[in-house]
Length: 251
Image 1 (tube, rainbow, N blue to C red):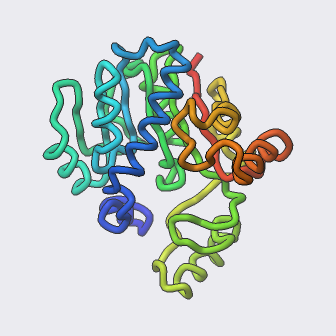
Image 2: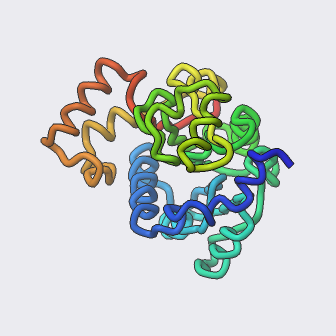
């Protein structure tokens, strides 16, 4: 087994954030706010697939707003936790691979892919699978980090994501963080190329402009320097902001 794949099989065990209810629910609230805005508050019957369900906290919240929610993850222990803790009639969890989704074509109205692309061995294959299972006119909620970031959050190491892979592997080992740098981030241009089959509807700018409306005020309360800086970057150096939230519409 490649080291990249083994790492994913127990991702939640080495990442406490996957079990942090407060931060996960914050993300879920932003998802609901964005999708409510896009679908004009008509989401109660929509079918949702989350390709990075992990411990199920986000999906449990989503299931209270959408018609049905299916959460998949290759992390067996995380799915076991989710299945035991979150039981709703319209919520289903299963062990599954985002690069080989066990679902027919055109099965879902919405696919959630939030901070997942950098963790899979082949992001292009995952994006193609998402395209396959989305119905025509459906959207993927795609939250993605930018390779061009000062600090790599998974390891808390400056400039890690921008280094060549061989150097990055040595860097995480020397820092005592891991034996292998598993994540592979793309730049803004790389992300655009990754999702080029879709119509990209950017919500990043809207969220930065109206953080209260989209449940993001905890990150950048209106009026503080961080918010003013984010607004400036979105307007003038969009390629350099730390991350993006896009809706990817299947034609």
